[in-house]
Length: 361
Length: 270
Ligand SMILES: Nc1ncnc2c1ncn2[C@@H]1O[C@H](COP(=O)(O)OP(=O)(O)OP(=O)(O)O)[C@@H](O)[C@H]1O
Ligand SMILES: [Mg+2]
Image (cartoon, rainbow over all chains, first blue to last red; front, side):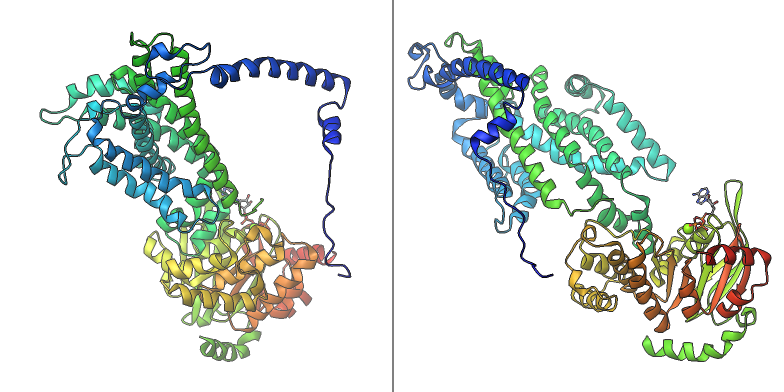
């Protein structure tokens, strides 16, 4: 009590000290540092010069790509196709609005203390798909219809991943709760659903959805191919999601259920207010992991003839107008995927930190 | 609420010396009649009978595994009984979920391991069930919660999370949380046995104060000092049976049953 203001000691380390401690603490660490340093220097240099210094950025067609580096012209010239697929130019503003809304909803999530950011996020999860449902396909409110067969590129990738992600989470929650239900019929249905869908590769699901499903559906009831793929992806994904969430449910101590029961909260309030918030928080890493892998798995729609971003790039690579641009194309696709997946991952880490209430048991 | 409680305690005070309350069935707030419970083949609770009057304070003790927890958990149906009747506040506990929910609203429970909700602040822990179960407006619920947090002497912790509190503080929050539902009955299952010695007193003080306010209480505890000061009756359980039931001075100075004598010898050695 005598000295309440005692501050924790500040630790200051000079760069030389830091290197001595971390890079050259023993002879084998020094050796490793030197070897790894050599490899980094010799490989990073060429990569950078291919990516930037020797690369061609300006021009109009492949004949302008004369340097030894990457031909980024290929990307910039065909960017429209990579982003929108065959979506007609004059209606692309509709897609742009969706991109804009997506940014407006989710960029604030990375900014600490942004006003109403919770509401932006909530709109992104609930309102955005509704707006998109009317805006992108058109056909109502005086908007001209654009068939889903014309959609493609990044836009299609985002639609598939976004719908897959936000639809599979609630379905997964319901399945996970159902699998722990005390009612045998509900539990049975959920177990069968999960085990069947989880045991099938996504590629098979997509194939069935595009080829077999139309054979089973009654006449006059037919979805577009994209819709069928979406349903397939969502159901497949929700089986995974259910198991991740069940892991969280199982980790909740029995005392939490008992305390909620003793307070007279019924099943739904207990689940919604006490159990799920804790369980979901606990499995954020697992949920994000499934999101990210779904995001990348959407590229499989290629095999049923939908052109996502990978599909558009791949079909352009074989275009005779552009020669030897395969690497540029794949690097571009990889970069796009990395940006989104890294974004998801950063956001989830943010969320985890924010939700951490320091409870250790 | 306060008024009726004090009347009750005064009215029941003279009866304190009467060991058996069987004649007084009608005014009992908890009635347990011929209750039996099994876990599989294991007969945990054997033909239990107990009447608790409003405002009465009962301490249950007994060796580990004797079924004390199981017994009080039957009173708010955290456990099911298979035979006999349990009637709480004139509602019989059956499979009917509505009855169970009604009873749970009137019965508060405090657990050995606190069981606070770690993702909610102390204040939210206290307000949650008044708001969602009793449909009290948020502002009112918060005011009530602060009142009870003051009574358990931790109003300054209201905005903290349970993980940031000491064990004794957490247990006091748990008591406040149960009280916020304005229950007629409070059940305590070894509320101090997970606590360090210096924290036991702060929790017991709160419980003693609560007992003084006329709350009907059933406490499973080995705190014999507590039993002596506040209990109207002490119940000794062993292997699923109520072996002895007596007012504290009689129970501690003059136990009738040999099993009780042995138990008391053991715990008073410490
Ligand atoms: N879920 C269960 N399934 C089977 N047996 C159980 C179960 N819960 C408790 N028991 C058994 O029932 C008996 C009574 O348990 P209970 O927890 O009521 O004892 P207790 O008197 O509270 O003991 P303690 O003082 O250690 O808390 C014990 O023998 C225990 O092993
Ligand atoms: Mg016990």
